[in-house]
Image 1: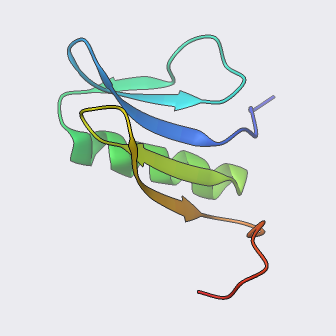
Image 2: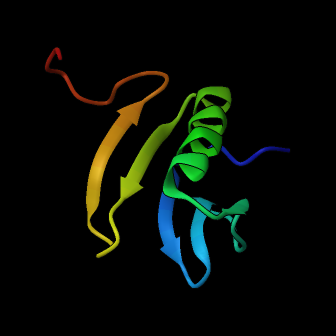
Length: 75
């Protein structure tokens, strides 16, 4: 059964990791942030969850919702 948590693209020891909230292990590892973002976006679309892209320093740089947006504001 797939995990429906938010999807995070985070820096790892050897590149970039795709992690799903609630999972113990990373979903996948990638050599570039762009590859990890593509993989994370597909998982977030499939799960109708949120994709959070972290920078090299760990702070969230971008977030996208692929499902019901929890915010009330448009945009």
